[in-house]
Image 1 (cartoon, rainbow, N blue to C red):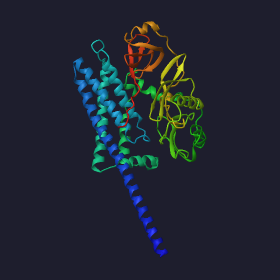
Image 2 (cartoon, helix red, strand yellow):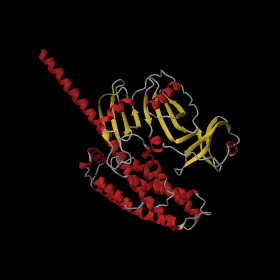
Image 3 (tube, rainbow, N blue to C red):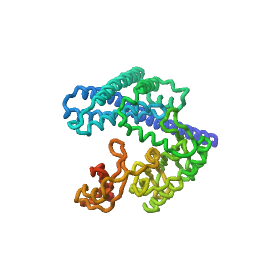
Image 4 (cartoon, rainbow, N blue to C red):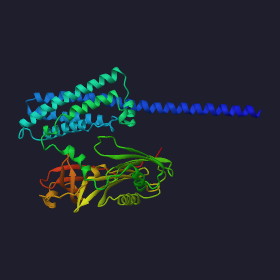
Length: 447
């Protein structure tokens, strides 16, 4: 009798385990299929965008009317931006692909700069026209290589998930048809000299070169756990540490660490030079709010100070459910430096940091010489909409659409029921940027 009961219980346990394993397998396959579909879509979209890019650049070369040339260049800029977005969605993080990304960014920079200026007063120069022809030739080369990769993908039914696994497995195992195809694209673009662009087109590289300003010694992999405990005091157990791939613009360590208190994992990247946190994220359930948004902002400021980030001020805060969102910027000589921004998320149940991004700060932060303003505060205010009730004003440095840092007067004010932040060029009074700030969200009762 007892033996029969034990057999029945064992049978139920085996069936239950098998069912659980089957469900787990199904869910895992669903995630993999979803990721694969996203990768395939991004790749084929990229191929299509490069086709369109080549056609559009070719069309602008044939245009004679300045009225047609500006919209044509705007289209080139738009298509290039979409192609950059598609590249960013592919699993190429560990594969050196920076030359191709720089090339696309340079096309976007060139086309935008040219499109926004008055071509009647300042038409394309012979050098710019020659640059446009070179862009057309090189985009045609990229188009051919991507089409070849696309043919191989379709003909051999290749999977992008295999690319991700091959890249993650290490350099010795990176023999993959798609990877080899993208390496060929990168090699061909690398042959395209950077000097073929006008020297003024440097904004693309500024954001990347900013990481060269990092201070401190190079951190070894053995030193990473000790550094991580500063960022995540509740970290426990083994840490999974993965160095960045060879050829990456920025050398860093990707770390996964367990937080037993909240029964979740924390993911973060730190720079090899100096051991600075680039970003941190912890996905966990944030329970009932126990601290105020103001207390959470103080916790965020303390976290920054503890990690060595100094001379920062809070300039924006918001609350979404039980999470506080905060943005900090550097201040130097009473001038706000908006390119040096750090964004954070703080859980309002225990006041702990669950999200952090310092990429902009690390890319831009350096000692600057603040230029003198050509306009006085009163003169700059005269360029602001007279209907705006100005409540705050200050000097600030922002990055414009061309990636250039501009000294501005910042005006914060209200007009009717809305709040605006307006940046006026401190030299010529032009409006560099106008932002409408979010109003408080209404609370809707459940019916």
